[in-house]
Image 1 (cartoon, rainbow over the protein chains, first blue to last red):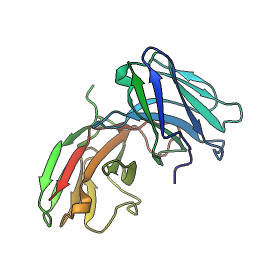
Image 2: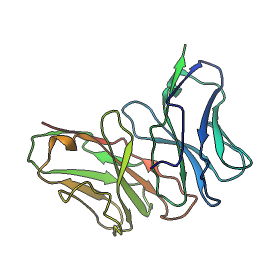
Image 3: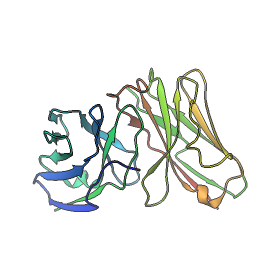
Length: 108
Length: 116
C-alpha cells in the first residue's frame, strides 16, 4: 500500500504556480520523498526528490515540512504541457509503490 | 545519452499465445525494474533485477509470467498463454544502483499489450 495521500485532482491556471500537496505522516527517518509525473500514454517521468531539506531543480521545487509528515511540489509557472498525473512516493531504497496520484489539469 | 527503451511499443496478440517484451536499460545501470499499468490504474510493481539476478519474484501475477536479464543489460518479460486480463502497459525502469536510498528510477515509454 502507498504510504502517501494526495488529492485526486487539481486545476491550475496556465502561468500560475501549481502547488501539489502530499501527506506522508508515517514516513521513517531514512525514507526519501520522490515525485514523478505521468503524461498520458507515456512512462513516468522523474521530477525531484528530497530527504529533509527543500530542493529545487529546473522543473520544480519540493518543500518538505520540518516534521517531514507532508510535502508540496511546486511548479512555478505551469504550462499546458504540465497536465499529467503527479505521484508522490515515500521510499527507502527502490521499493517504489505508486498510489493513484493527483491529476493536475492546467487550464488556458 | 539514450534513455530506457522498450520494444515493441505496441503488441496485439490472441488469447493463449506467448509474448516477449524487451527492455534496454540505460547503459551502466545495475538495477532494472518491471511494472504493469492496467487501463486507468496505478503502477503495479512486478519484479526487479540487481545485475542478472532477481531475488524476489513474488510480485509476478502468476506462474505464466517470467523474466530474465542477461549480461547485466537487456531484460525480457515473457507472458505465456496470455489472458485478456494481461492487457496493460508494461513499463521498465532502471537505476544506477539497487537498495541505495537516494536512487532515481528512469522509466521507458512502455509496451502496450492487448490480448484479444
